[in-house]
Image 1: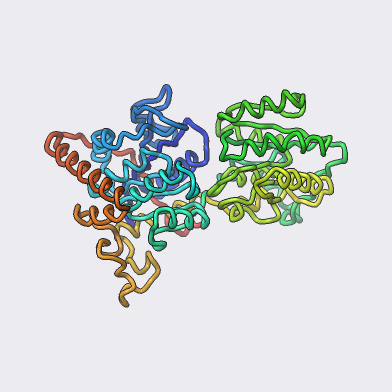
Image 2: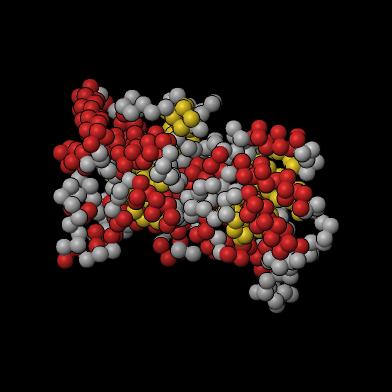
Length: 492
């Protein structure tokens, strides 16, 4: 019988806010619960949401009341989060702390405190960073600090793994690639055939053949291009603002629908005013995640002008809805969809305009079978598969599977002894002196600063153990666990 774990997912990014990381955490948690694990979520308070909430599927969310700093990431408190965090972890009897997203200070702090408390930790990276600008250098130092002492790292694409290994100078064996997935059920095209009932089968002897292509687009039919994105610089909003008037000028029977919100929205609005495009560009403003599909199915093409992206879940959702995807060839995006679903552009204005033109032409010539995309995406991405692979990581770090099996090498011939500071089976040892050795290697000044942080964290921990002893913390009754189905039934 496979072991089950009590897992705490920690990130600043969670519902009610929409986005890729948010839905990743939700879907992964749901599937892990289906597999018999206990999962709770720790995030910061949102307007109207503080304290403990249960989502409809019984997933428990702790909204910790912290000041929100930037783009819904909480203010870095470093130590003041520890007492609340320890309380939650002991109440819920957590074994594994799983942090998400490099810009989330809550996630980094949780990893630090969890290691001080002697818990296993996993970190999932959902973003790519450069190495040159000040913000990236700072983020990389922070990441190096956090990941000096983490048990395992998961990245959402191979590009993302390469980036993280370089940024935090990690051993590549410590990093696994597990992609995002999509609930294809929630992203059905508009005219998707309902499931045929068994009775209607005999009359359709040809049901295994693909349905005939949809009515071809005439030369004067309007083609709608959809963009759903947070309107920030890194999402390529400036590129979009420059490209829209040129695309609309080159192609008379086209229009845009743009959903999303952010500091760059005002640039788009000014561009619409200046070019008098109010009747051809519709700005919807912020939308909730459950509305995304209804916006997508109004379009034929999905345009994704991002400048950096580790995975890009939204383009998989778009393809699942039967949209032809025009996207920039950056980051992990080229790994995400097969080539017949996408047209790639360099992340620059002229190329984006040209690529969109090619996509419009291909649709007008009826060269793309977008009506088959949904079934293809459905078979490519599954959250159950993601949960099984994540569970394997948990088994690896907690010693439930042998190190040779987990890291995929022969430990007997000495390949397993990486460094003095890693304990048995390549899993980080919790001894304070070993942790300090790892942090000390982070840089001349940073190393000493990091060591100081760890020592202070350890002292706070000792203080909490004395002042608020564990036996005074009441244990939460668990939500009844799901019985795990036999693995054979679930692989599908």
